Length: 562
Image (spheres, rainbow, N blue to C red):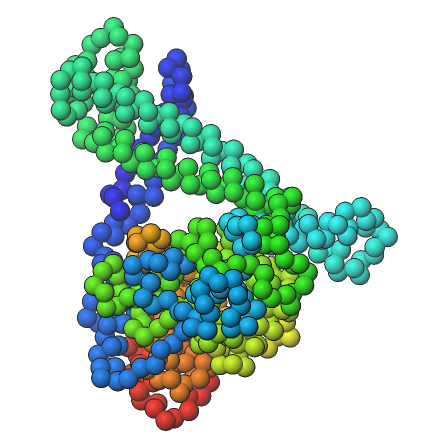
């Protein structure tokens, strides 16, 4: 992360005739300098390393010479690069299936499912983009109520009222995205224009006056009738006037280039939202080829568990179980695990049918932990997802879910899937995780993380997490999506060395062994309010592998009460 800088740029340099309006820009580079934070900080120990990590290496000191049992962890996500150098040796392999013979050898309903299954693929390709659940509900209800006279329906028709709500939100969100997209595209054009002019000015002045480094003194001495040189002087003078005489113009040009790249991504996100997310005419299921209304349907999809855009899922997988013995890349949390890849999350909102079937697949094929780093605001087929969660509960499978990155209180604004069934009862095999950072200070809880005194179990490292990405690369990402596999990894570690513990017992061990911070005041996400850390989750603490293992050892042979 580079040092903070603030640049004042001229927006109207597209034309050489008129200087435009002045607007302020502050890049993502103005965030806290984190170069001193080690890449594996999330594995580190709070006591010995002064970083609020998971104490993974310290946990292994308690487990020395203790036998372990292989645990299968299912990763329901965007896809996993199963050939990654740090993952290929820890991938689950379906021993009952003969690869690529076009036969369902194990008779489980899925052909050639060697490393898992892709529920958002079909015979001719894979789903990359999908609509938001809001839009899908809008489309579903529009067919029933588009031409309905509200007066004839009456006030007791709750579905029609829901339709009006969805219609209003859809219209509002679509308009907001279109406005933002237009604004972002315009701003990007301005940035690109100024970056080009600044870069040209630097090169022109250096080459014309045979200097290696620029300074205000050099720029002030420029006298020329050449309009290009005079314009170059003007641009450089603006930089020095606003940034000071020591302003590194070459560095500013490079950092502006990074802003352009960043804003290009933002613009692409807006374009994606308009073209796909909020587009009522887009239907990804034509690729899948299933009968979506048949929630009991099995066998749809394909066996391409990497799919398109597997960055997120590959990153999640590495946190849990990147090879700890090969001395390359990074170390994951667990040392005796197999990763099952289940692709069910597109760029857009995942669908309830796919998530429910992915959970069932994981349970039926031996997973003991299921990682779910995704979420959405609506769940129209929640009943079917609930059945899958209950099925996992009946088979002793632990579900770990990220709380979300919207700074919301999940107690009042639920994120789906949820630990609570439609009848209000709670799944006993569920862990909900918020994201934390490395310092025991007011910024301990990530500023983007959702929270909830009644709904979020605890927090786990989710800021600047270094992990595997496709094609043997590595990257730092933020999110409760990273906190979730950190927790899943700790849970799998405990299950591996204490195989007789039930999913509910493991959940309670992780809850009871969280690190507490006496009266620590933290910044409440989404506000300027400071609040006691204990008020943001059920346990009031951070998950910790060392403390979890220590508690499991002390309770050997004893029942862990809920």
